[in-house]
Amino acid sequence: MGWEALREAVRSCAACGLCRARKQAVFGVGDESAPWLFIGEGPGADEDEQGEPFVGQSGRLLDSMLAAIGLERGREVYIANVVKCRPPGNRTPTPEEAGACAAFLDRQIELIRPRLIVALGKAAAMRLLGVEASLASLRGRVHRYRDTPLVVTYHPSYFLRTPHEKGKGWEDLVFARRTMRELAA
Image (cartoon, rainbow, N blue to C red; front, side, top):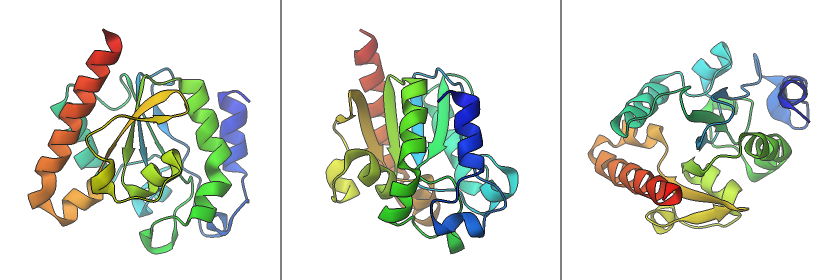
C-alpha cells in the first residue's frame, strides 16, 4: 500500500470505537522520506479539528524542541501518532486501540524508512518496543523497532504539566542528535 491508499485506509477506518467521535483521522505530517520520525500517542482536540498531529500547545513545544537540535517540522522530520483518532478527553490510547492502528503506523514507518525514531511518551514507547516499562528506565539508550534505532523521551505534554522536568527532554534530544550523528558516521 502506497501513501495515497494508506491515507484513504486511515480516513475510512472503523476498526475501533475511536472513529465514532472523530471529526477526522489524523494521518501524519512531514517529509515522507525523513531521516527523523517522531511518534506521539494520539491526536488531541486541536489535532482532531485541524487534521494534523501536534498543532496545539504540545505541538508548539515540540516545534521548539526540534528547533533546539536544528530540526524543523516538515524538513527532514515526519510526525505521526500511535493512533489516528482522538481518544475521548485526550486520554491515553488503550493497547487495543493502538493495536487497531498498528498496521497503519507500521506501514508509515516502512514507507518513510527513517534512520531514527523518537518515541514521545510511554504509549508510543510501549507500542513500538512491545514492553511494559517505566519511561525513566527506557531513556538514555538506543532501542530497536525492527531494524530501526529508536530513542525514548517524554511526551511534550508532560513538560507542559511539569516544566521543571524539561532538562530531561533536553538530555534526550541531545542523546538523539548524537545517536543520529553516529548513525551517519
